[in-house]
Amino acid sequence: MPGVTSADQTELVAARRRVAELETELAVCRRAAELLKEVVPPKDRYAVIKQMAAEGLPVEVCCRVLQVSASGYYAWRDRPPSALALRHVWLTEQIRAVHLASRGTYGSRRVHAELRRICCRTHCRASVGCIRQSSVVCAVQGPVTRAGTRNTLSCNASRA
Image (cartoon, rainbow, N blue to C red; front, side):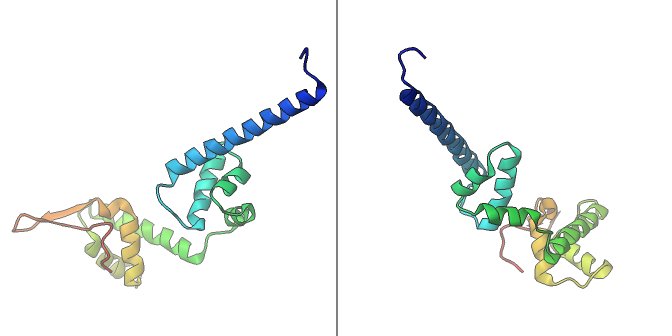
């Protein structure tokens, strides 16, 4: 550029690079705010980082903005699922199968009873927790009782 010294040119290039870094960090902050509506533990933030990385945002910037270490993210990403996670996936599939077999009429109590009868002696808390987490049964309303109220399972209920 005419009239610009090499020192000024170097400073301009560095300023443009810094502006690009800050714009990237701002984009990460905005996307993280969209995905994380509340404070979550680091393990849940790793899933958000994985999603943002798939969208093309740099992992290192995502980790810095979400206050987790990049090495922790990569260790989480490369780690195989735990036995408990595999059991929850299997149990959720069983819940979906029982619910579909009942043509969507069974609520959480009947699904739990059917699971105990068919396949396994599940721990009550584990199976009820999986039933609540799998939105299949939570959205289902039970039959109308004589009083005209419906038997439903609230997904946020603290019943065990």
